[in-house]
Image (cartoon, rainbow, N blue to C red; front, side, top):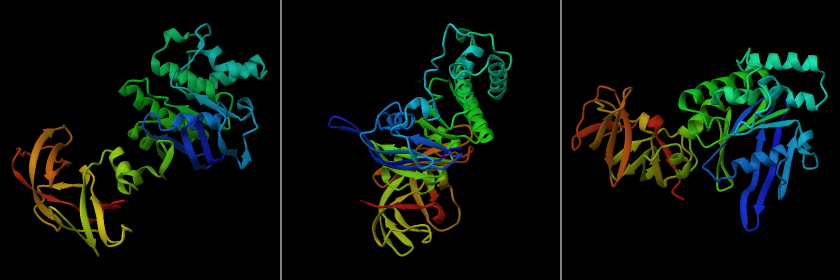
Length: 346
């Protein structure tokens, strides 16, 4: 297992800064997601870790040893790309064993290790098939087996599930998570999908415009986002301006008590935020209740999605599946104090 440390890692292309002074520590055996919108610097960062791209400044360290002068093929890091890049003229066994063959491993050992790796990725008996005979999910499994068979120090996954349909993505998430836990290999993967990041990663590094915004456990991005931009990236636009005094926040639609132990903002102007799934609709009792007009109501199977008019903004909320409300009706809405999060107005 290998610990990875990025120190002030920077990559510039002329006047454009793709990655700006990135500090990131990945513990040995940890699975970390590099998350963010397209063009935020995720893949550039991964390519610098792998040695496929030279940093403009900063350092990449494996187990506290700088990798800047170590060529990619000697770093012990393997990268699985979004496109599978399987050799079409080789069968599955030859594809998986290619790296071992290049390292001079004898044929018998290659056969044994390839067989064990195909068992690990749940493709036993596929040795003689060619790439064109495999589904997209099977090709991705072969690419993963090819990367792991050389027993790397570090596994790098660049949008590994982007080309798969929804069912295959779920299946591959479970497979990657199981293999990573079983092998205890340090893994970094790039994704723009919030759900994928929080389902797989021990920690998530969120990047915007080449800058690390928040590095935290997955649930912190839902419960304790650092900025409005981060909250909105995690699909929470339920934000309203308010004035904090002690354990109370006064807004345009009412006053709300907050859990004072959860917030760090001083008294003064703040932004009050609560996630859609935390809002209690048709609340008959309890504090922090206000009556708000319903804008729309859509049955979603497991819940009813209700859009509320909150001042001059529209909030999303999730109610019981059997909730029946119509646009224009007033509904009792409760914001549980422990579920309210405050953001800075800066």
